[in-house]
Length: 381
Image 1 (cartoon, one colour):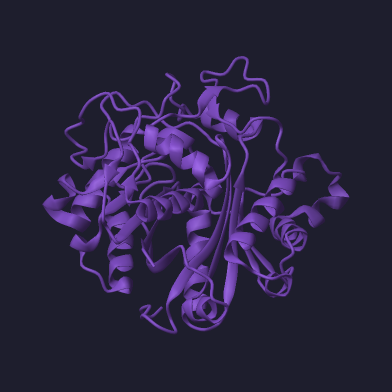
Image 2 (tube, one colour; image 1 turned 120 degrees about the vertical axis):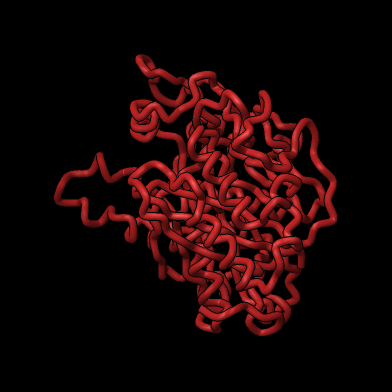
């Protein structure tokens, strides 16, 4: 893929919608992120008796993914100022684990409940064209969808694409992560901190309107941010464990910088993957030092998973929205759950209180099982 240039090839985000443990809307999520106030609490949505860990960050009530996705897509399209006709021409790129109804339908109906079928149904219910693509590639699903959408828009192959992701904490995935001893037993996510013990799951239903700057100008829409660059790289190191030297994530960062035609020193914030796992955070810190050199020790970094949890397929898109909101506000979220320094994670962590910034560019990083890594580089409009 070629580089994105200012002008016709420029890609922007014009609308977003969010549901998290803190409610609906970016404002409530950012208030928690700035305060370092985590949403983790004992799970009441399903039984957790016999589990090692019983905490997650869940939205109040009993949300249904098939209902919440169209609603959040509608909020993103509303903010973007899209008419019904414009929505009706936009395809959907949807990051999900799958159709939540699939395990409960009769065998002869399962073909209609595949991921692509679920995506088409969500698209139609959200007032979109009905053309849809499903992404199921674990934690990089929604960031991969954003990169694909941005590439198509940048090359003039699409005017706009709605990207969405959805994960609501469920008993099956909770059991898998608990059995794999990946969850933090103390009920807190502590990215890059000494004494960190793992991740915790969190609800995330997110949507973003990705479109060409030319199309946005034509309809006088005010962009929230520019998608200046994106990069993807694989490690092929281990099915679960990250490559310790962070080489793949560093390559993804380098590709995003090259696509945006930016030098590393132009980046003023990194919303890190920072899952809170001992090995994962150490590898990510190594990747940042590979990409930024010794400047990584002072580069403002935080992982907002410490507040909203791990949204699996939807998590990367949620964190992209947080990164955009932080740059627009000129305030960087807190890396919550901090206990003390880890000598293997020498980073300029945002601790105690939000950090003021005038930075024009930020990175949102994501890694997934199997060695997949993505970097999304956003800039102020």
